[in-house]
View (cartoon, rainbow, N blue to C red):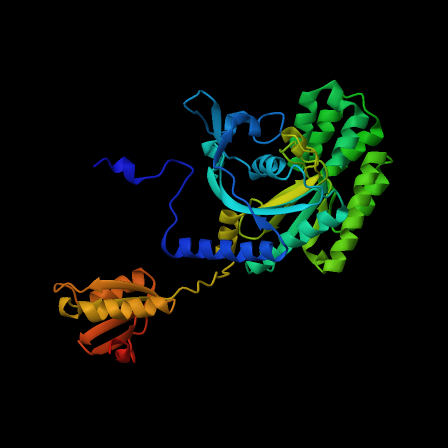
Length: 422
């Protein structure tokens, strides 16, 4: 056999046994929080037409997409980002809806990252989209929902860092950089995202921009922290668009205090996203144990228009794989309720064993049946059970006598289940 077939391609991995159980349990716990806020499930295809994620939409660059063709020659892509898919579906199925729509989802995304980045190319995401509401109240609900999902996972130490796209865009427009040189804007975005204050100063030193604006751009990499960061930002500029963005963030903070979640919130006016479809607040969630964000999201008021329905929207995704990594490194367990039992029997006890298994399954127990091999001892099956995270072996010592063996302590006692066989 070709040994290469046993391995997965670079950037993807198998998840099994305890890790898989914990991941599924975590997803279920997070999903319950979304449902508790009135969000309704939606499933979109794993692959869609290329134009759903095209340059006009402003999502993942084409070079990072997994592209292929159908029988008719149409270019298709594996879903790299949920938001455009949800926007397309919402525009199709909620065309006549004038009031807000709340949708939630779960599935995998696929991005063909460069191998040197060391990131997974397939990740599981769980998220929610609040469609048809441009209010700051919708912003506050989404931020609160993010915080509640992370708390439900067991996290205690995390921060949701919030920025506003229009703060940076307004300054760029005032400086004339967007019209003068697109390359300069892209380089400036990267320098600010990397918190490179000296790089920003060097880039703008030869540009025909006012000293006041140069100072604002150079300060952006350091313009983060608690609500006082907003006060500092107001002292730096008189730009109407930038001040409007700050006012929105201040109002948002006031509502988050009503929800009682303000301690989890900080602000970063130098936050810049690679997704060009964001129009208002953007945010990321961080915690110990992982360098990447465990939550990403923001407002995208114009995306739905690409699919034929104008509807302001805001949403987020939890990157489940990153969250699991963080929980593991912080020694936070994901309790798995499932307790497996193994019924071990000999051939002459087959009928009784099957009868017992049927009864236990009706009672919502998880039961495995194994006919004991003569070459293997009870100790061999105990070792197997520990590997398989089976907590108890029900062992037919005789036709009408069953012993219960705890796989961790090896304590053996009558199972008190004999009456089930009568």
